[in-house]
Length: 220
Image (cartoon, rainbow, N blue to C red; front, side):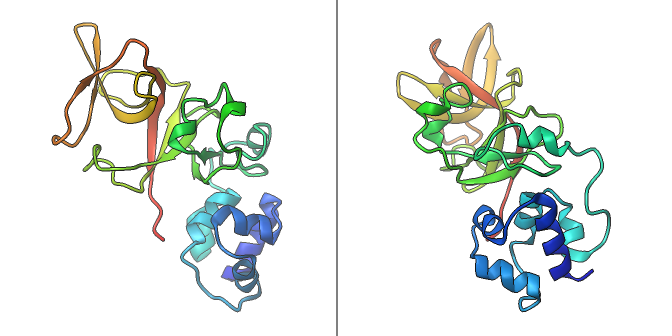
């Protein structure tokens, strides 16, 4: 199979129209059409296309390996979660990338969210829950471990432990922040990775929105 055949096969496997796939990977429908008819022989978005369709990115790019990686989630598990937050008809669960201001509402109060349309999707690790969501890192308080623009996947079902990276809603500031959890003598602190930023005590009213379970980077 050539690249054009693999992209068409992946799209049909996921159950997407050309427009639906184009919208999910943020390119034009014309670009998908050109790829599938062979008028375009390469694309910088093949990894994003593979993740959106739930297929092996290496297979899609090169034709090597299996189309579907072993140990992946069943398609019914993703489709049961409900559009538009999770992508459906695929073997790889994809978490929605949402805004930082909406993180405090996820997943219990989705109706209060400012937007019901994800900013994108990111692959969820096999060990994380199907309620995971994703955020795009802002600022440099967590560098060098995390860079601005990185996408982090956050699991609201994971139990937060000392030294884990967490996303926290701070009611006093009406702000959502991303820091490393530090527990000392029964007190909890939020620690930036970048030493230029101070460690701050975690308010009693603060709500841990979830534990960071993976980091994902896109190259435009």
